[in-house]
Image 1 (cartoon, rainbow, N blue to C red):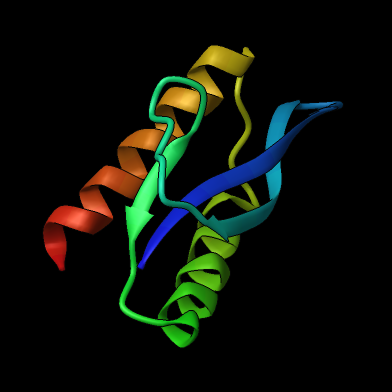
Image 2 (cartoon, rainbow, N blue to C red):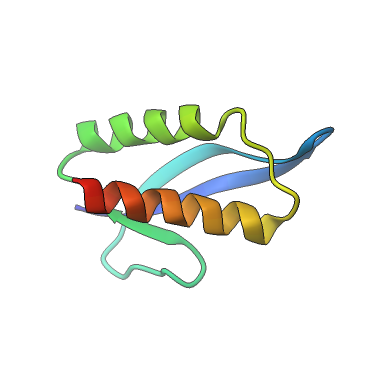
Length: 82
């Protein structure tokens, strides 16, 4: 199933952080303004969301573009590894 990934990019004392990752089913992916990932089931979606949340919990970014590009690269790398 195809999911559109979203998250919040919030300011903090040490830079921007990404959290609140969510994945909504989609039939028309938007890779310009978001990130799309193909996951086999809702269980796999939940596992992936937990994994990405843990991965980015301590990461900080200097700007929103860097945060977006880093999350997008992480998702694409994950898709290739599967």
